Amino acid sequence: MNPQTFAEMSEAEFDALLDNYIEREAAGYGEMPAETFFDLLLERSAAKARQPLNLEVTVVDDHLIITPDRETGDVIVRGNEVLVGERRLVFQLAGVGDR
Amino acid sequence: MVMTSIQIQLPPGFGPDHESVVIGYLVGRLYGREAWAKAFEAFDLLDRAMLVTAQGRFTFRALYQQIVDWQMADAYLGELLTLPDVEQQGPALWSRFARQIVSEFMQRGWRRSDIPEARLLLSYLLYWWGAFARGYALEVEIFRDLRNSGVRFRAHNLLDRQQRYSPSDLTVSGMAGDIKTSIYFVQAAAPLMHDFYIVRLFARGHTRMLVVLLKPAAWDIIDGDTVPGHLDTVVDQLPAPVRIRHSGQELVVVDYDEWKRRVLRLQGGGVQ
Image 1 (cartoon, chains in turn purple, orange):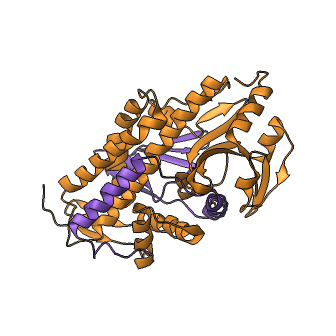
Image 2 (image 1 turned 180 degrees about the horizontal axis):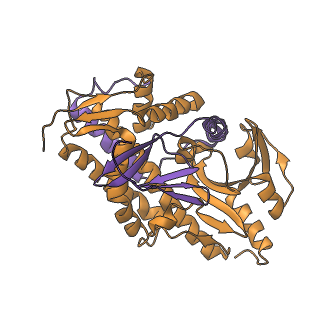
Image 3 (image 1 turned 90 degrees about the vertical axis):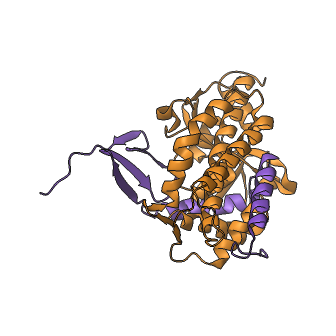
């Protein structure tokens, strides 16, 4: 579909590609065609409902940082908080050690 | 600039066809359903791609959160809300932050011609920045338009992190709604929980248009009449309210201005 791969692009070509992308987006483009949108939205929302959302937890200076494996519209994850519908789940580190 | 040892690990299943559509997205050459579907799949897969450095292993998703979301979101939103004309001035603000992301990427020593896969990381960061920034710009546009039109609604405060991450963006006559750009909506697709969604997309000829997608029950509160439609023809049937069915889901699609007119009538006011 596209003539070049990233490996085939020189630094200058890649810089030009990014410049053009940013300029084009700044000119107000950046949506998708309606006929494709409806089809893919309904197909993907049905498919995503069946997929698990995996959360990765990192401890930094006794603080938990939760990272989802993907962005999803129905579960919001920020820092140590997970928002599911109207429920806000706040995770705290209880301790570290052997049982 | 730092010269550092890095490695990019792409997830299983990410192939040359995925890279091709990422480039296609950047150059604005995604045509047709299959190309768009492949692009969404590519960015799904890149969520799990890894940057490996001496400091550890980081998924592209985690890097987006750390480098872009946590560092730039508040500053961007603060400036966005001061713009008198978001539709005209918002894209320039977006692009200034996009260039900041490029600069940050280079300062971290990740621009490496010997590791072309690193370009996928920068593409990923810019893609999601576009989704975030454009999404909130559209929210501000819609909130201002609804206010000017006389529609009564409650909106979350974008400058309050707690409220920003609330499950819905606004409530209109007891109905919970979200405001979405088309690409973000499809990329972050999830079960459709809200009563309605205000969406911006391209109609034929690259004309931007706003539509409202409603659950049938929410539409019944406003006005129950619809015409049956099909995914391929729904845009041509607007502004009439069109009922579509797909993948076991049913939605009513209506032109945004038409939706506003009917909401104003429901709220006991006239068109302003």
